[in-house]
Image (cartoon, rainbow, N blue to C red):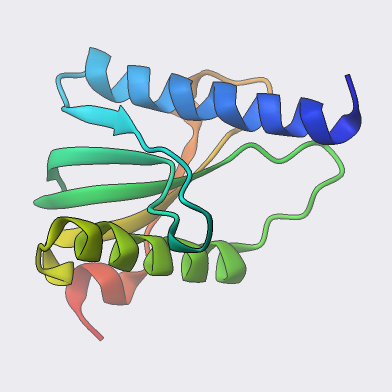
Amino acid sequence: MTTRKSHKARGATFETDIRDWFRANGYDAERLARAGAKDEGDVAVRADFLGSIGVLECKAPGAGNAIDLSGWTKEAQTEATHYAQARGIDRGTVLPAIVIKARGKSIADSYLVIRLGDVFGG
């Protein structure tokens, strides 16, 4: 397996694990299909994700990969907008978030990153 393929496989596995974790904890979650330039995120938690619909950008960086909170946050916000537009819903009801895998830990130990302004305005 090439490095690129192994990275994609690690990411896909993490996305599935996140979806399954939310489902196991009573949430309506689905893995979203890739849509190119109009990508809508990796996982959607459709009800009661901190009072909103959660659109999650899942990241499973390898040991040598940097964590890019600024870039990933921008990506999550853009994809949350695409998600809302594709469904004709108000963007204000969709909360973008990043889930970052904690290497060597359980899914519950992953990091959930949400921009302050996305929760409280601004």
